[in-house]
Image 1 (cartoon, rainbow, N blue to C red):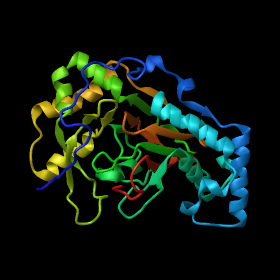
Image 2 (image 1 turned 135 degrees about the horizontal axis):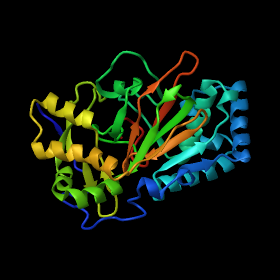
Image 3 (image 1 turned 30 degrees about the horizontal axis):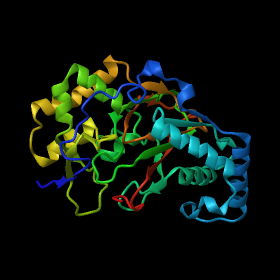
Length: 330
């Protein structure tokens, strides 16, 4: 099978030393104060004005633009969120939107505008899907993007790691929390790098070499199904990740070649050092909260969960990129 080669960062460039704090933070270094962004009354009033107009005059949600409304307080709030994503812990949790007063369509309209204030929303599939409802669809889906719509654990990963243009940021608006479980975790790739540099430098080096990644079938029809790229890249300033155990194992299976033993050990070592060194912060997203996270410089995890008839976990996912066009592949 052929595969699509993707070049990122600078070929062969690797960090020459550990990053250290504050970039390489560990769970004990951070707390809710570091990722929580308050939603001030002035911002809520601006959101309510958006909803009021939306009830009187409709446009398709993706046609709404911040310049159509007065969103000064919301813009300041999202600037704070962006700062935490780019220069802080890598997670921003808006606390919280009054979604109980809105329909799901109205909540999506507000969420869309807040995202536009953060960065450029982009398609999550080749067919232009902009919002993805993350709910347990039942069954036992194993493949690709469908794994997200189960109640099973999603181990640490990068969203859309098997395609050309990964999102810089991922958004999740909570319209309903699970009856049990569903805890979120997030860790810094810089902390993973430093832990591996200390524990297994040979395995760390392997992560900067190419792997095969399954493209999940969400690329355009007829395109090559497997991508080849390193798990870690470095441009001299920023570390970037392309990590998913599931997508990489599927990539090698599709290509019909075995993964090399050091390559597999390096992948396994990532999860091992996250656990052993307590690298990940943890929190549960409540109804009305909106989580944004830095998808390229961190890894995120979702615990398995259980729904109840009167209480189902429901997230609405969005993707954002700071460059390129809003098409799926940029």
